[in-house]
Image 1 (cartoon, rainbow, N blue to C red):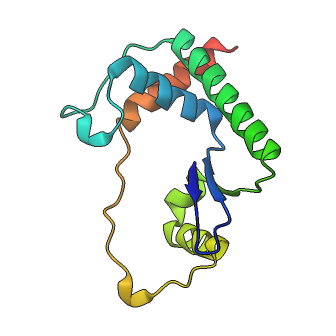
Image 2 (image 1 turned 90 degrees about the horizontal axis):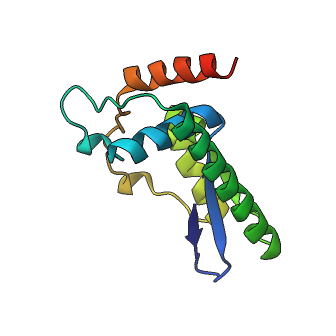
Length: 139
């Protein structure tokens, strides 16, 4: 979530959400258990963490509560956020930038563009294994 104050002084909020809530909970649980929150913190070969359905469930509850809290706060403040979806931002980052610029009423200048390094995902293989084990635990 980002609170932005454009030149007109009107508070604007950009909210990043994730459609795949199980993947989000797995990512959060793995990071909480390993202490590795970013790819640059990962040891070579990735950070493997012992699977914990309990940790995933805890992360799901925590993330659900955070979403509900943000919904309530924004509703009470009568702020209509720009909602961006994690999966869309990863697939089409330029479109996300244009959406934010439009939302803020900012004109993008192609001459001011800079190269942004690609974001690397953390231990994809371990996350997939967790997803499979979590799905099996829900049957």
